[in-house]
Amino acid sequence: MKVGFYGHVRQYHSFKAEIDRNIQEVLESGNYVMGPMLQRFEAELAAYHGARYAIGVGNGTDALWLSFLALGIGPGDECITTTNTFFATAEAIWIAGATAVFVDSDPRTNCIDPSKIEAAITARTKAIVPVHLYGQCADMRAIRKIASQHKLLVVEDNAQAIGARGNGFKTGELSDAMCISFIIQKNLGCFGDGGAVITNNAEVDRLVRKLRNHGSDKRSCHGMGYNSRLDDIHAGVLSAKLKHLDDGNALRRKWAARYSAGLKDASSITLPYEAPGYRHIYHLYVIETRKPAHRGPLLDFLNANGIDAKCHYPIAIHQQEGFPWGKGARIVGDISNSERNAACCISLPMFPELTAEEVDYVTGKVMEWDRTAGAA
Ligand SMILES: Cc1ncc(COP(=O)(O)O)c(C=O)c1O
Image 1 (tube, rainbow, N blue to C red):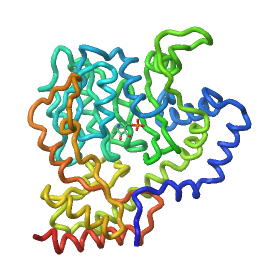
Image 2 (cartoon, helix red, strand yellow):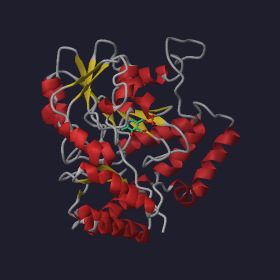
Image 3 (cartoon, rainbow, N blue to C red):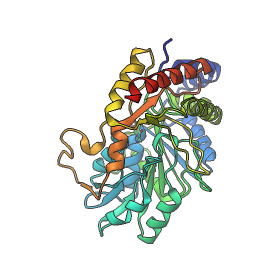
Image 4 (cartoon, rainbow, N blue to C red):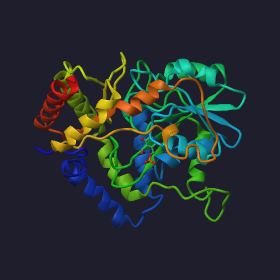
């Protein structure tokens, strides 16, 4: 059997009529950029989050640095985040001209460990940038409390957890801005690049709208800005898919529960942890080998058996060659949890359109390896 890592084409076939209808509507309207479909999707996305504003931009990375710029974060400022994330989290901090300050992640959730943040705060600290890694929210209540005490901004990197909830809080509720990616493989993915900023702050809304459109909010009038707009065809695709997002996330949770039940007796790996009261939406289902030396052999075994397992992310940002490329970067304290996560993670196939047969095949192969090579 072959089990792929992504279900994009299966998903397209499930919602083909709605997606095609929206694309057709845009094509026939003649409005392809900053048109009515984008406005409609922005309103739907804001409503989905119970937020006042949603601004479509070119991708999740731009969503982050445009938010930083709108919030006045730039050269001389420091942003606290983690190194076990996709590269773009830190990249966006550097694009804004700020310094990335890395602290350790929580050993169970792999999101930023709030107890490590205060030691990293200096007079230059401007923001905390938590990543809702793999589909589970960081501990936003603890982060908000620290931010309020120290008068810091909070920008959520929510590229991976659209539709997730924390214990008594929603994503986007406790921050100044929240940034989403719609790249193909995300839980709400388009057919290329796309992103959005969600905020309740009218000034952030105004500035991101201006910045994404060559510094313009009035025809022919410009200030310094960029070109980073979510095009209307993609807004149409996303509008169709947004209606199915919660169902898709529920299916991901169902497959995650099936994986976890099937893998519970494996002794050589640890399973994903869902914090009490949280709703993890399993953008990724990530197991960790207990021994770093086991990660490569288990990954090879799965791949050799037709299972497209991957790693997110095997090289932490501070371990990338050439780090930090002349950019501002500081590591505060021991970041061994982030390093363990990078060394041991394996992502099993996870998308709503999986079948029980596929999940059971993957589970069976992981257990087979656990009983043989994993026991060595
Ligand atoms: C955690 C995280 N941050 C930022 C990004 C950047 O998003 P994009 O690829 O849309 O620029 C991604 C995804 O790619 C991500 O997973």
